[in-house]
Length: 246
Image 1 (tube, helix red, strand yellow):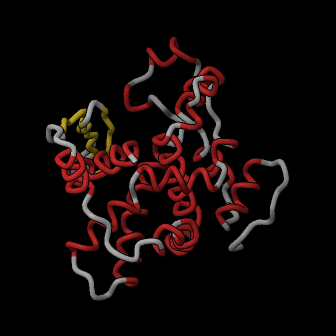
Image 2: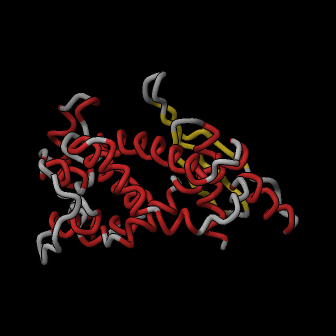
């Protein structure tokens, strides 16, 4: 297994390999990581076929399964990296660092730096609607690529990818970021506005690996956060809303 792939000109898979610094033995994993649900749905026969599919099979062929495992791999490797980089910090400081580094805005920024909008496979009508530029779609694609690297090569190449792609973000954290929920509360109070309200939009997944979708509303705007715990999902939602205000 080689650590890096050469720049591949116009072949999307080879170009992505060069940008992440990893050459896949199973190119189908990378292809799946770059496939949005809409493209998989289109190839699976559209609405009529979907109506006959059991719920567990819907989205088959998309990057959703790889995003699921990539999210867990990222959480582990980022926690490991933070422990190594900040040996004197405790959970109170490490937690906000972690929440920020695995948040949707950071992941979407990494996707933009990798130019993923140019190579994501989406249905034509979704492409016209601008799906390739949506932060949640880009963040999911980054996690799916990480999941694909992990399944293809294991933890070590996944670790190298994380250290390479997140290096600028972690170096920029000279001080622990303020917890996004606290920062959002201070932002609205400073402007005499009502406190943010949080709402659970969705909660699914098995008991050992739950998935929470939380919506926060403040100052007339809303944002969502997705994570394996309600607290982290609320922080992710608050961070996304703060980014919009800024």
